[in-house]
Length: 274
Picture (tube, rainbow, N blue to C red):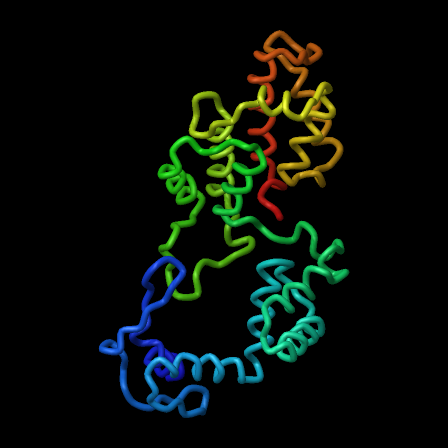
């Protein structure tokens, strides 16, 4: 019932210009509404503000919203005591989101082992972060949607108002294969991504295999991989069809091997973790 009454308060509101809302009084449900035991009097546009005040005034609102923020930015398993402290701080600030985020991002917990590498990237995060990290714009952005859909994420088509589940819900056999395939699309020559290994290596001034591998391991966010995996990546750079040979920094070799290296890194399970 509360949801229905709140929806009546919101009736008539719609999107207009970019980053703007518009109100259509003719579409508004007139009459008083009751939400969470509080009467919201028939007052047109003002009802929306009264609705927000009513929701935020509920004892559980701050804790619920802080928990959502924590799970999105920090980890899926928040400490109840810490959530209570953050909720009280946020409530005391007049629900200033900057105060909440500043408190979270400057906390010791945020930089501890309990928070680092605890979140699974959703498909959108995975694709966009890879593009930015490799400095490889997508050739035709209208086609990137099909890659994201193959990972289980239909943009702007949430199954219900609560949106998609986050975390490990994004990970299964098919989605991991789709992420690896996307890495191939991004890095292969004449593929969808405009990845230029020679340009990047020259720009960065990299001259050793170790520096090369370590650079891409770092910028792709997998610097916590086991030493054995990192060593395999070093060996990959020296591997040729005729056997192991020292990698040489020639344009042809760079173009061939660095594309393969980045594809391998993006295929690692660690590449899907924030």
